[in-house]
Image (cartoon, rainbow, N blue to C red; front, side, top):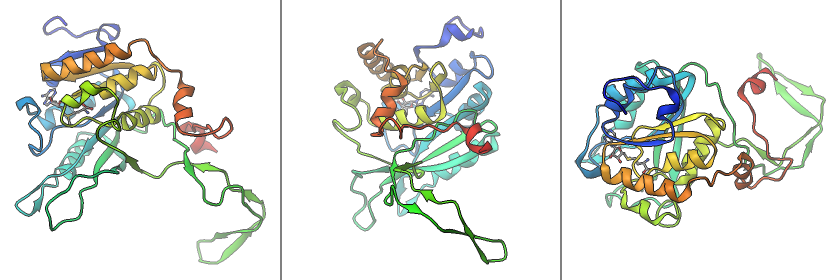
Length: 300
Ligand SMILES: C[S@@+](CC[C@H](N)C(=O)[O-])C[C@H]1O[C@@H](n2cnc3c(N)ncnc32)[C@H](O)[C@@H]1O
């Protein structure tokens, strides 16, 4: 990258950049990113090779580089110190909204294997996933993999509640589908062999489970889109974006983590899986493999 000059689209995609994200992002053109999936360092929970970041600065840059109706997924938790939860996640959520993003959803990343906390507290088992959009999201592919307990049952007479509290019978029989869209709490197994099978990635202290990156990339982008992680650590988001046929951009300030990310990508280079592969992973049969585009969903 040449110093100080803005870059054209083709020049900057499919690379891992080592450096401070503020300096790198400011060289990108306005409105060039379809989706960002990222997780910042927070509350000095981890050392991350000694680096820190400027919250308002990076949010401002993310707003600038995000396309109209593009999405930023921001994953963050809270620490516990001197009997006090930090509420850092809330501060980050408000900072994202104040920068101009709509808070399209507040989702939960629930960990199936949480770490043991302070003896007199319940187990810390989740982080927040803020789904921020620059206007109304342009891409929403809802994952339809929640099994309906009453699948196949036909409800011949249903009732609809009216405004005045009375009910009216609805005549059309409704067959309950096998699968419906997910709830906004997503559960993942974390740790060795669960987050990833790439051993090298465990040299990073706080990587995403690959499935978390996969599910957000699937939900908020399409093949060919540009997916960014400006704090990409071990390179989970770039790797999954590449495998799913998106263009990736990864940035991290640590040379050590950039090396891990590049090695992971090299191992998976050109192993792009067709979109259908990701739908198969959701355990659905041909008929059930449905993604619902936002526009058609809301107009129906
Ligand atoms: C929570 S980790 C991200 C882990 C990543 N999601 C993964 O799957 O490996 C946060 C990362 O932010 C990086 N970071 C901190 N300050 C930064 C800055 N100013 N510019 C770029 N990266 C930064 C750290 O080096 C660290 O790897």
